[in-house]
Length: 314
Image (cartoon, helix red, strand yellow):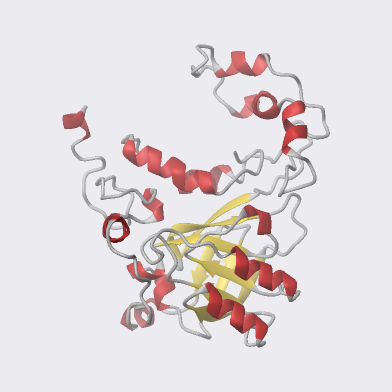
């Protein structure tokens, strides 16, 4: 997925699978580390001009794996009954254009960037174009909104200015309930020519189709779950570094701890039934947003034994 600059959605899905399967792995951290050593071999839309059909005609994922073999353990058995190396040997070689070789990649910078820091202890994710001509760092004052609509209104009336870091919170898994999309806000930034002048941080999600500028989504813990994002105030300085993979709030820890937790002025009505149950049970994105805690040890300050009870259920 890293080599093709694929969907950021895979991170939370893989983390959820790992939690349910009792596999002790922090997928967010794996993406964060491996993204810096995995070259991007394709520029498939929305990362570049190549169509998915063209990618498949050039060999698709099998050819990408063939090119990546020097970085992989080829002896691993796959669902085909053959090893990874055997499957890769059967794939067509890279054409050097649509799919490039390991020594001539489209980019050595990751298209999927996982960030962590004082504003996102559990992680956040940014999607970048390939290659990325834009800035890799951004520092500016926060402008905080409780909904997409509030953010779009600030773009329209000029309240949101170049150099600001827009924050939309309260639309994470609990606050939504379920992750809210913020693509409409990003489209509004683009329409006003602010995509590369205003950074954006949210506990919601966005489509990879709108990966212009510096945009960080799926910040965990989310605002309404007393994550640091919920304690951000207008004017607080936020620093984003896509090279170092950090997302930090430049507010002293004691001052941040003294602030009141975020309480939405208008709590979104879950409508009763399943969505209310979901809101009560859903876990942080860093745990895959599974329903109900699995005592997996993934949460910060979780001192329970990892995957407690796994042996009993085996």
